[in-house]
Length: 121
Image 1 (cartoon, one colour):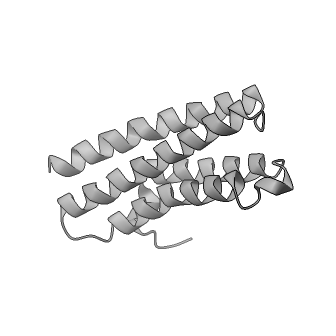
Image 2 (cartoon, rainbow, N blue to C red):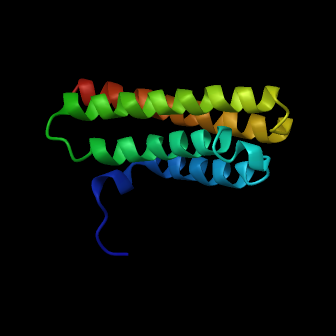
């Protein structure tokens, strides 16, 4: 691979891609009746985390970039809410639930640091 766009250089974007893969793999085992429910919602929200980061890097001002970082964080919290619900509905094993929560915590810390940097530069 030769040229990398700026979002591809963000560690938090790389981490969010890993979260997407985890979500896709885990939701494969969700019941068919959840295909258009939690499965779809979790997948869309996880993709939104990475997509907002990518879109934010195309903005001209740090304030605009920080806005899209905030949107990424909001989508991440949506994923957290949905995995809590999935776990309480016994759709997620405890080990998978804990793995996702750990990833979410790591990504949320990086998003907060990125937003702070964007607003302070």
